[in-house]
Image 1 (cartoon, rainbow, N blue to C red):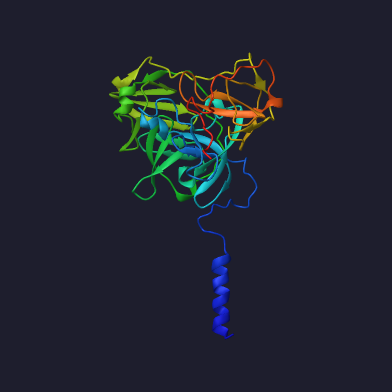
Image 2: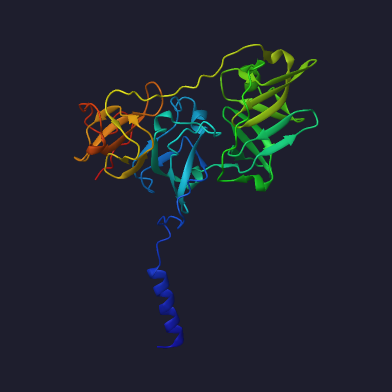
Length: 352
């Protein structure tokens, strides 16, 4: 065999025997539970790195009618990331210190799911403090989701319902973060009207605007009258903003947004911390981090499992179906009321 033929055989073997480029392979790194990432709430959360795998929606109620609700973010741990997919885990704890939304019904669970890599958000990896000559300023916490704008170095920072355009150095932008300590809470000294925020009336710097997608007035932590204008301070878990607003748009009182939780009912069946969770088709789903009462029981897809519909948010709306081993369920039994897991808008098992 000539030297050229030998080389051709080696190349053919390398090409034919190598792994498929289309196959997702996790990075060989240990699970990262020390830092957090942000995922868009409107993303599809799958049980496997396959677009045809069963998926569950974690978007807030009403996202179908108000698309901006699906443009909020959830804090997660990234366990592994490939070229197209990331394996994530919900924190299984209170995430109120993060600049992200929360799914109250999932607080006691560490669920392992898959999202596309593009669903992971860019965010601030260090705290940002930018004062301006007119007395206004922007102070951002770590973990503020960012939307890259066409102008190099400029981003739209999303602070819950508030958003503002900010110029950031490349070293302040990344994909993982540790949450900042929230600023101390103070009693409100006034309120900024929702109409002013929707219109972009508050000014940051000379031309920057502060906007809101919410419908409630925002409490003010500080207020400094300046003739026809007022210098106001808005303080939240995402940071502190000082902006100039027309004086007539500052009101003494307004609508305070309510924080709604979904407490677990102590009655009925419950599971203890450490119990393993499964999806209705038997695939591993994660673990339980706190004692949690189970909701309406549905018929299990596996004989050794008991499945329950878990509401994600208070009130009517979509839920998720989670299963545990029969030996892990404690308390009173509940008769199954649904014949198919996921029938109430949760996760249905894949078709064979």
